[in-house]
Amino acid sequence: MIENRNQRRARRNRNAVKSKAVSSRLRLSVFRSNEHIYAQVIDDNKGVTLASASTVDKELKKDLKSTASTEAAVKVGELVAKRAIEAGVKEVFFDRGRFVYHGRIQALADAARSGGLQF
Image (cartoon, rainbow, N blue to C red):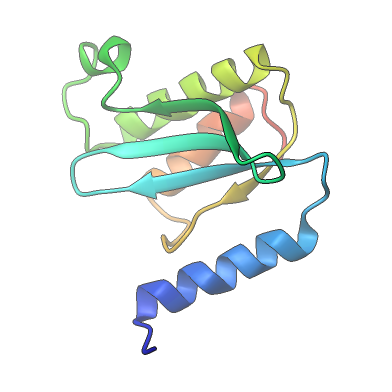
């Protein structure tokens, strides 16, 4: 199977995360589209999502001027950190997937760190 550049980057990043993974740490996975940004805290051992947040959430969407901005990514990062801490999660691995650590992805990560998550 022929992989494109994004698929190779995502596979390389996932392998790096899995090689460092400790069973006690969960994964903060981020997905970005042109209009929205999504974040999930995932337990890969159980295959369960413990906390999630996105710009599609009603409580966030009403406060945002644009869902495709770094301001929206900051709000999502803060909300996912709050929900993860409520679920009892403090340490995670950051899985940026195929996306470069820049712009909205970086803003979400910084907000999640300031919200109390450690990675």
